[in-house]
Every structure is written in structure tokens, then in C-alpha cells.
Amino acid sequence: MVILWLNINSSHSHGSVSMYAIEANRPHLKDEWLSVEGTLSTPVHELVSAATDARPDIIATTCRLFNHDAVTSALVRIKALMPDVTIIVGGPEFLGDENDNKAYLSANRHIDYILRGEGDTAFHQWVEAVREGAITKKLDGICFIDKEGVYHDGGYARAPFKEIKSSLESRLFDWSKPFVQLETTRGCFNSCRFCVSSDDKPVRSIDTQEIERLCDLIVSKGVGDIRLLDRTFNQRDSRAVAMLDIFERYAGRLHVHLEVHPALLGDTLLERLSTMPDGMLHLETGIQSLQDNVITLSGRHGDVTASLNGLRRLLELKNLETHADLIAGLPAYDLESLFEDAATLMKMGVDELQIESLKVLPGTYMRRNSHSLGLIYSPVPPYEVLATGEMSLADMERAMILSRVTDGYYNDRHLKGCFSRLLSEDSSFLTSFCDYVSRNGAMLQPLSLESRMRMLHRFLCDTMHENSYLISVAWISAGLSMHKDVARDVKAYKDTLPEEITALEGTPTSEMRFYTLPTPQKRYIFGFDRMNSHSRPLFIGILPHSADDTNKHRE
Image (cartoon, rainbow, N blue to C red; front, side, top):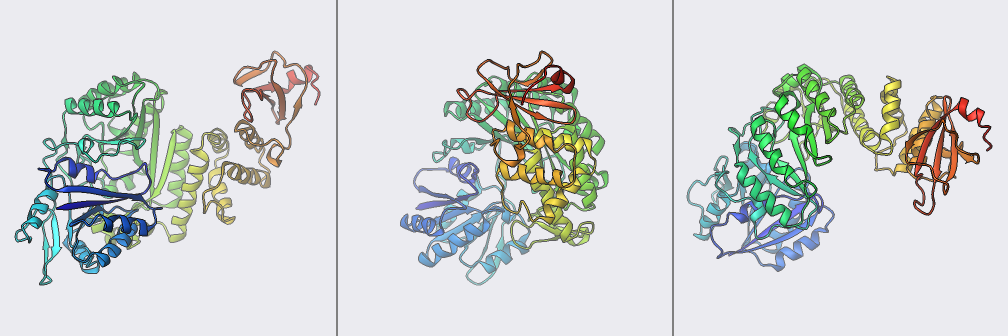
């Protein structure tokens, strides 16, 4: 039997591990396993041609939020060309109840079966049933409509997680990607009502010896980046510390992304985090909202005060990166509170802030209770909230402007410093700038760094903002042209640098050419060495006007 996996990923880097997890646990080698892989930008005819050329007996694929349409588009064409092929789909799109999956199968008759839940072993049980010629008994996780039009539902399939092989051990595993996903647990102790893992209890974990063995495998393959699939890394401090001990053995060879709940951070774990090698860890902290009523309605453990205290302690650790998130559209969350929360997290100095709209996912509490919670959401993927009792459609659109501004300015290394300063000195800045962006229809499409800087500079000049020079400093520091309007006040600095100059970056040398930018309180000095850097200054310093006047500089 020829089994073909159709893998359509959002990008080359971000792929599904389902195929690898299932293939790694195949009970025998008598079937031929093939794969056709592409991304959302792959032309559908290429996927269809590659799949049909393989002449498979079975086609399997995983449906997720952002590949749903692409998968459907390819499968309906494949079925038209190969009406006898058996098609089975799985993934988070099918975690809903029997009404959801029955409706999907009824509307998509080219799909023969759905597998709800974990396919590591359930898929192989289904393959054996297909090999025998018919599905005559109830199989875990398998949903289908028989020839008489009767719907059958196999519930939710769970695998013996501690006993199965890791996806990394699949013969098909693609080691060319820039990072790998290391699955260390399944399920979550938390009860976040928007998450598909909230009902998956108890948490199942592999032991730390197995984690170390898999880390050895990853390093041996030359991959240096791990995304840990563990919903809450710090559920138990003792286990978290043991895992950090393992990761530290690969210092200089591994970079690890993991999720922590800041409200649950204990002193022991914080102390261990503080001793980890610089830059080895990227922590994603689940914040979602800084409003206690929102957190309560979301079913998340831990109050806001505890989360903020934990986040502050993490931000004191300069050896790691800390990411935070907010979710627009959660029940009871209004637009004003969202802006306030975003400003709070930016002022705290999180390394990265992500603002997303709530996705009302199949199989979640919020999906089942959307009406009573006042959630109006898109009926098609990605099921984003359109309006709530607290936020209108216009409010949700404003929230997405805030998201784009946050990503394009606060999260950009060239702009973060000046953006944070503008925010700290002007409490109305964030709201006013988002209003400006919205009125001008900007950022509907991705903008270049130069375009983003120009837009912020125009806003500051239009509003007569005294700190507009900060954009000129960021512009020059990023190596953008000094012949354009944002740098119009920059002049050549032809005198000897005074002793009073304060270096912000680099060291001045005799080979440098210097330029100056006057500001109300001080003067910036930029040193360029064209032999070693074509456009970026290698020295940046500030000079008080008093010292500058004493030196009688010439421009």
C-alpha cells in the first residue's frame, strides 16, 4: 500500500510534525510512505501533479488554521483526478464535536475520513482496517460517513505518549529546517478557555533522560534551534530546572524557545534561569491581558499581579529574551484596556510584544459558548473574532492597527529605543500615533524600515513634537541615507572631538569622518569609517551644548 502525506506549510521554516510523529511509530515497513511538501505560495497544480504522479492508495494531511483553504483546494482536485484514492485528514481543525465533523464531511464529500486527536498509533489502526477492505468497527478518533449516509464518530484518539517514538526519529524527518520542534509534554494543567489543550488532562510528559537523548540527536544533525512543545514549561520547578541543566550542556550549540507562566515562577527556577548562558533562551510569557476580570473569564490560572511580578523578575535577567502577548477580543476586554496594557508592557521593556486577535477554535470552551460570551467570529478559518460585547468591528480593526504598529516599531531593533522613549514621555503617544496610522490607511501592507521611519517622522513633525529628532538619530544609526529629508539637519563636524563627549556606541578613531545632529538639549556625533562599514556609523556619541560651544566647532 502506498501512503502519501500532503504537507502544506505556512513557510519552509514552519512545518507540521504530525507526519513525522505518525511515520516514526509505524508498526512495520511493508507500506511505502511518500510525501509531497509545499508552502502556501506553492501553486496548487504543482501539488496536485506531484500527488497524482505518485499513484497513492491513501492520502493523509493535516489541516490547521492557515493552511485549511490550500489543503481543501488541493484535495478536491486530487479526488477528481483519482476518485478511488482514500483521503484522511486530521489536525486541530477537527477537534470540535460530532456535529462539527459531520457537517464538514457532509460538505466535503471528497474527504473520506477524519482523525480527531493524536494519530501516532490511531492512524496505523485505521490503515490496518482499510487494508482489510472496510471499516466495520468503531476506531479511536476516526469519523466518517458510510455508504448508507450514516455518520460514525470515534471520539478523541490519545496515544501512550511516554511509550511512543518522537517525531524526530521519523525516517522522513526534514533536518534542513532552521529549527526543530521538540515535544516534551502533551496536554496542559491550565484551563485557558480559548486553547485546544485546556481539556487535555492529565499532562503527559517524557522523562528527562529521553529529552537529553533527543537533544543529542538534534545537535548531531547540525540543528541549533529548538522550539519546545510544552504548554507550560514551569508547571513544576524541579522538572524545569532539570531540563535547563540539560540545555546548558549544549551552550553555544543550541538556542531554545520555551513557554513559561510568569504567575507561577518560583525563586528556585528564577535563580536557575539567571545562571543560564547569555542568549541561549527565548521565553514566551503567557500574559493575554492585564485585566483580572478578563483573565478570570478566560479560565487562566494566576492573577494579574502575580503575572506582572513574575514578568518584572524575568526582565531583570539580561541573559535571556522575554516575549509577551496580548489577545484582543477576549470576553470583557475593551479597546481602551488593550491600549493601556500594551503601553504597560512596552514601558516594562519586554523584548518583544505580540498582539493578536482571538481565534475561536474548534473544540474549545469559547467555541462551545461563543453566544453566551458575546463572541461574534468568522465562520471560516482562521475564526478570528469580529466583534464582542465590549469591542465593535471598528474597535477590532483599531486593535489590529495597534498590532501592526507594535510589530513594525516596538519590535524593530532600529526603532524600539526611540519608540519606547516617545511612549514614556507622552502618555497619549501610542493612541495618537495609531489614530494617525489609521487615518492615513498606512500599514495595511508590510512597509520597509525606511517607510516606517518616514511615517513616524511625519507624525512627529505634524504634531510639533519636540522629540522628532529621535527618528533622525534612529535613521542615521540604521545606516539609511543622510541625503534624505529625515536627516536634513545632519551636518559635517570638522573640529576635534571634545573630551566631554559621551560615547553611546563604539570608539572614535582618526580614520573616521564625523557628522553632527543638533537637538534641543545636546548634540549627537556620528563617526563613519567607510573602509569598515559602508553606511552605518561605527561611533555614536552625545555632546552637551556647553562643551560644544566651548570647542567652537565649525559646520
